[in-house]
Image 1 (cartoon, rainbow, N blue to C red):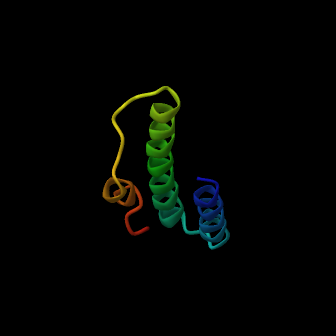
Image 2: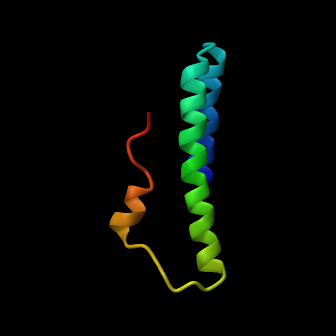
Length: 66
């Protein structure tokens, strides 16, 4: 998850520096949505929810980035 956040910050820094508001918004939304899913998954693991994801489902959390 840390690597994902670092990637988001790097990508956002680049689009902000370039003044590209559309790309900044798209990247922020993408990373925010994915991080929300990861936090939900972590919460389920921490609190003992028995529904778990298989590797294919986990891979699906990280589709090609915009």
